[in-house]
Amino acid sequence: MKQVELYGRVRYAVKIQGMSRREAARLFGIDQLDRRMIGPLKRFFERMYEDEATMRVVEGERDQTFDSASISRAFERVKHTEIEEDEVSIGGVLIGLQPIRRTFEFRSSETDEIIEGKFGPQLSQDFLERIEGDQLLLGREWTAKMLKKTVTNYDGRSKTRWVLLQFEE
Image (cartoon, rainbow, N blue to C red; front, side, top):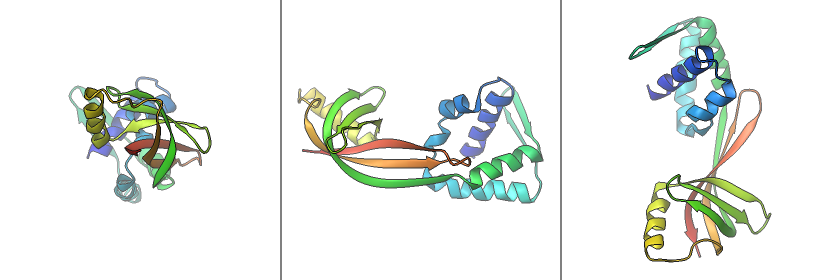
């Protein structure tokens, strides 16, 4: 049900508050959907579409109704959305780290590309222990194990997100 609520919140932001679709997608993290959620989401909207259903979402004071045309658009979008996830190991240098925001910047030794993303919860605990022990993390050569997640939207555009899983010296 969380994904239905998310869809409702995005539609409310776009239709009622006048936010652009791109702003809403960034705000609510649609491009960060888990690959395991796409299948059930596709089946949900397919069923709603086939039955020409409507949907009403009520949360507190907010009350939003989605007609069959809205459901049809949602189905077409989610039907053509694909998420590909790969675990990769990349050698390089850690050049930036924000523990509170859980973000990192890493320069690949192979391509000299700056990779930005979030780091996973296990890495977060490991970093805290290293920082407390005054171990120098930035500017060192590491092999980083990362999750590369590529989301291809209904319109063919794709976006890659990175999650830092662990470091090896």
